[in-house]
Length: 385
Image (cartoon, rainbow, N blue to C red):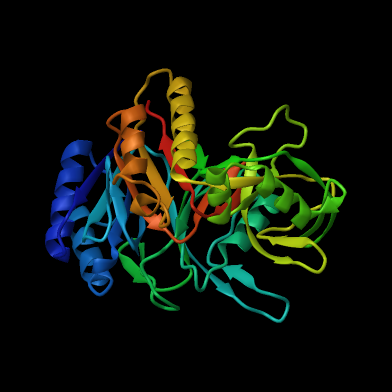
């Protein structure tokens, strides 16, 4: 497989499309078979013109993408300024692009537009509209009924309400549902950095109902959190106050606990009268939970660790390319310097063709199961030949 990427900073859709295609094709050096296109929210009104020119320049081919709050290309992240990021690939194998819709029914809802075969594992890149497509339900379905399917992607962040998203699919612009590309023969190394670190001690859930955690280690969950806060330094208490998270252990049979061993979920609220806390996922009695904090240092350290491990696994070989799905709460909202995630990819993995966007929710596997995340950098690394 071979990939190439181009980042063009202009608000003119025709100029942006022509320059991006010209630069990426020149770098690729052969005919592309698959394209991924991301454009900043400045192109919301001109999305159709941008898509039309890209299609004219590339010719018909499988293509997915979206309008997003901000975009990334190669070693740069462009925030608050117009930019277009184009990623081209050759030798990736068959590519099946598709659109999906979610229809609410009396029994809950149904997905339509594409069928995932349980006996055909592969890689799926998925970009969804957060207002009309409940990606978490689709991922839960795939985890149960098509466990060999690896899903990476994100929720479009360029729209401000229903019917305001702009999704790209094979020359068309859609405003709802989801677009995706199924790559049955492609190899992807998924790196999912949730940007948190554990704090305090882990506890076994001893009483829970749905997403309500009543007791941790035989004590009310709120008491455990208050005891933790009282034991911390002033700096750690400030981090806790900025947004305490809950980490649910992925593999209860693993030895030791460290970053990456937990599925991170936010605390949604509490019941002072009962001491219960509500978290952003279903919790079962017997699960191990540990409180987490999120800050720039923790996020940097975890992504760096994942990338350095990836570099070792690749044996020094440069990846063919990568796609980055990073949270719109990262970037300059989290880190003191611009282009943190793309810069770290470049510094650890080398001059890798990268395209990405700032998401309203990131998709990626943790512990072999697909999930929707927040404040996460989900990186799909395509190893080279």
